Length: 163
Image (tube, rainbow, N blue to C red; front, side, top):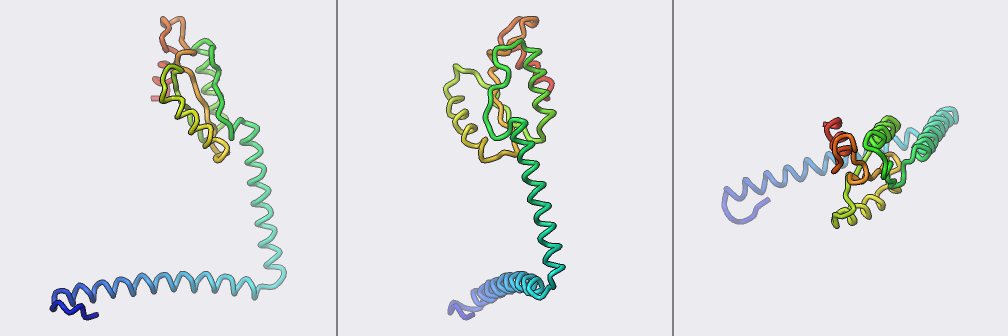
């Protein structure tokens, strides 16, 4: 590939064309691999196709059952966690929710903070799109532990326990 600017640019041009050629060949090999998989599938007999259908059906059933379990555990919604309760009760409700879910998003908020409203809207929009994750909000002013003097001590307990 002659760029017309001398030998140093010629070397650069050759290196660029070699790397473009290598990337193109890698893409072509990947496409050929996919085409050969589909060709093998078309050439397969009915028992192979039936096995493939059975595996896919079992996978779809398992995914549907998992989604049902998630929805039964409160996934797919943005819920308020035990607002207005004693700090220990909020902690218990929090840890119970955490035990039921592999993925958990908790927004520790104060109603007096304006930026929390935008965050609530964002999480409420995300929750239905991600049923594999449970979305909760926890009012830190509403879970004060009276034994420790109020002012968010229940939330402080949760944060300390979570590390």
